[in-house]
Amino acid sequence: MSTSLERRFLNFLGSVPGAESLDVLLAGAEFDGERRADFLLFGRKVILEVKSLEVDTSPKVEAEMGKHRERDDFPMIYGEVELEKVLKHLPDGKEINERIFFRTTRSVETATRSAEDQIENTARILNLKEAVGVVVLLNEGIDVLTPEVVAHRVGMLMRRKAEDGNNRSPIAFAWLLFEGHVATSGPAERTLPMVILEGPCASVFDWFSENLTYLQVAWAQFNGYPLLKAENATLEDLKIKTASSLSKPKGGDNLTREQLWEIRYREQPYLRLLSEAEVLRHGRASIERLTPYFLVGGPKASEKEMERMMTAWSDFLCEAKHRGLDLRHMREA
Image (cartoon, rainbow, N blue to C red):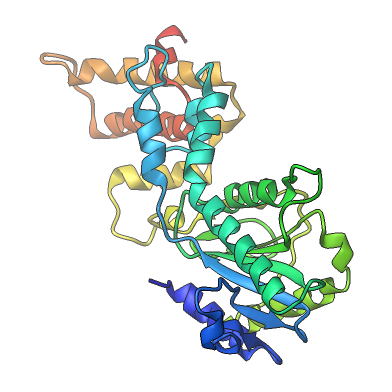
């Protein structure tokens, strides 16, 4: 089943002047069973295939992490945090992360290799040996397949070599579109990331850069959005987050006290300047001050004093979550 993003993008391609649908062009019985790309563009100089990433591979992350949760060295971390904040505490975290990467990006590899076959076969059928191969990968809402992850996996595939040492992939350019992720830095508060990857053979098609710019501008206009170009050196600089993770309560909502404390701390994260050891000591002191008031027969505190102590503990948890601190070390602080 195609996603709404895929349907919208295919409609967009159909509106590009001179675009030819290969399903229409190769509709004859003699082409039955022949794999083909989606469109020819710019006077048949471009063979373009569209792939939509629709399989949520996050269960593979949980399956791999589940193998390690009972380990003595597995960290105790408050709240939901990024995977790397957990794995940094494990001596074999790098190896675990690599296994997770390849398992969660298997759908990306499958889509990319399928596109390669379709582009190559289209070039053979229509004798378009000089055409540039382009794949468009669409991610409408698979959170685990972030722009960084998808770009890294596709880039690896585009750079791989054949047995004779020549470039294996016919894909010169990959255009990655994301609508379940947003970049929270740059010229706008939230922007939908578009990533362009150039393969080893891209330099042969210098003329395509102008056409690619046209497609990006046209796609933005098709959706009624401005096109903003980021000058960042890496994707990490863009601070890309999932759209769902940004749906945090704001001060005007009907919030609990705990949520209000979290909002206040995000606005003034005063523990951010401390070292990890200092933050852990702050957490230990906070819980030690609180504990007696929760014991049977323990001392009593005013509502104001109790809230002050609870806020200090909440602030620690917010900072611990931000850093991915192992709370087990709080005993040693």
